[in-house]
Image (cartoon, rainbow, N blue to C red):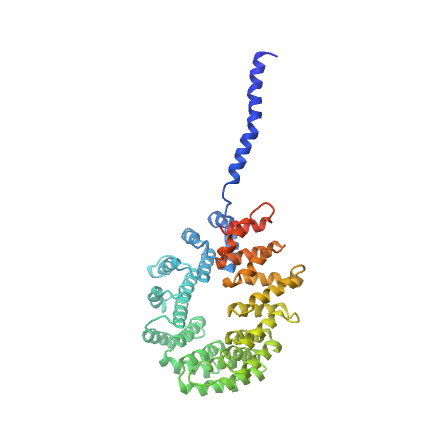
Length: 460
């Protein structure tokens, strides 16, 4: 072999010798890199459809982790649907740093800048639901704005804040809204007119009671407006209006109007509606009236009323009434009621919707024995999840705010199905259960389902 050929071969041999080492070093370098958060990447770089899908998922989970990233996104995007989704998520997660951005959005209307009505509505709803008192002067300024959509949203926001107990000049706002009610045509400005009716009731503005009771009694008025006026008349609570509303409840041929009249009657603070509500729940053939009665009987610590609610929860032909009865039973409390709810959840003769409704009542009212009840369901369905009931239970648990469920979340991590594990991880993350976080991190290995590993990475 010639010397020149040997010189050519030497570098090749050296490269072959070094290459595995170089490859090994590169692989090791990659392995120590932190895993990429795919959700964050989509929020920063994804297309609109991907963003909307992620926003929907975050809202469903009430996941606040990415709110600060969304604060940057909302400034750069022009997509009104994405902006609305962000405000809805911020509302669901009570994200107070977003208040100033939402106020700036609404101020575009005042300053004459371009704005999107649906975005303004979403921003107003968010601020009103979160009781941002600094936004109240903006709503007050816009409640009689020439753009009906903006005016309607402002009036609703003021009413919502009044319901939430925000301090405001109810006399001045009430007087202005009453004047608008007298000026507007209810046929051409249906939504605005409805918002005025509702907000006058929320403001408890007594001088508007005559106009509102007039709407209730006007057979030629919109049924929608008459129904809303029933509630507002009750909220104002003028004693002379009770009999008028009671007459509507007993005599009207429109069953839905009767239901609203009953709801209005329950708001009169100086009237005892117990007997009326009991009879309505027992006997009325219209389900909406039974629903209103069941909701209104919450908190009555009377065993006969509780027996009636338990009967309706078990036997009413309409699921909405059964669910309303369950909620009132749970909200009232007591050992017998708690036992009833727990047994209801276990009753395999009940359909999935109703058993999950019982679970929601258990979680909302933090009923003692909930952990034990869930473990029992897990024991029954661990190997074979009939009708996917355990899956649905775990999904509800994942969005609950109750750290005492730690033993349940711990057990969910052991389930053979990846989705149950994911729900367990979400519940742990949502409740900030640090004692289980090390165990979650330890699951991030090659033997774990990739979908579980993505969920773990998303939570970092």
